[in-house]
Length: 367
Ligand code: ATP
Image (cartoon, rainbow, N blue to C red):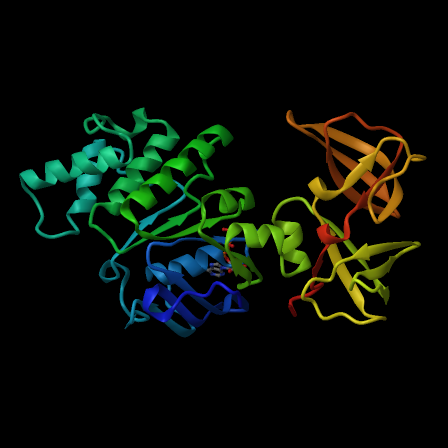
């Protein structure tokens, strides 16, 4: 549940308690989701968490063991894919190699009515323009880059004018640079058409960059649904905190509260000041909180002072130079801490954080 649930009259696609079982595997476990009209909605999560199966249930390639799929107000649970008004793009472009780019796109048009004729040529030109491939109609697909092929696949999927666009890891076969470029293009196409889009990726960075809202999935169920900023800044659970971006998670016990509502939390031999936010916590409670690497403050000299409420000594284990910053791996009380710095660090350092930058999360799913 989030503060950001769509109003009933703006829902384009809805899953209601949808379950999909294969023999012993429950691929999708009682999923309820509502995607808004015109929304860019992303399913993200580790391998095997049920992203693809969820998308296939929306497309109609799979039918649920339980539950219902609705497009607007219409129950489409038993409706075959070709009658669902969806365009689908898969990971491996799946273009027809013996057809030109234009013929591939025109093939998509033939699902629309009225088919054939001069208007088709114009539509193909418009679609190729939309995906930034004007003038490429006569090319063979194998003479295009991976990113271009994927844009042809998108144009073909959009040709019949579907209400909903479904994309399953469309960029995972591309190299990093191409992926970044294509994701901006996909976002631009989606915004230009204002088309409801459901996107599947295992790449959390991509999910944050491209989406209006993200569902972080785990074991067949969304663990948290919300806008990228909320998912990043206010992860509900330890799993989400660690899956989305780098994070430092501390587990401890609440020792006391001060007059300002700050909790003192014992973590091993150290006591940290933490602002519990709207979490209801009491003295003696077990608690997990996380601090993003960019919110850890570092002093290279372990004998210096930090202007944070709490500071503790840690040891530098390794560093990765990333250009703008360096990501440093510290060891602290047998656990790893990640920090971002500009200056090189070595040996023992002092590390701390402000209580407001510690975000309390649920250890398991009970949020
Ligand atoms: P990936 O990122 O690896 O593609 P995913 O999150 O998309 O993973 P799914 O492909 O939806 O996950 O699979 C979810 C679970 O269901 C997995 O355990 C998978 O092995 C199982 N599964 C998916 N399709 C089938 C099938 N046709 N028959 C049996 N089990 C299946």
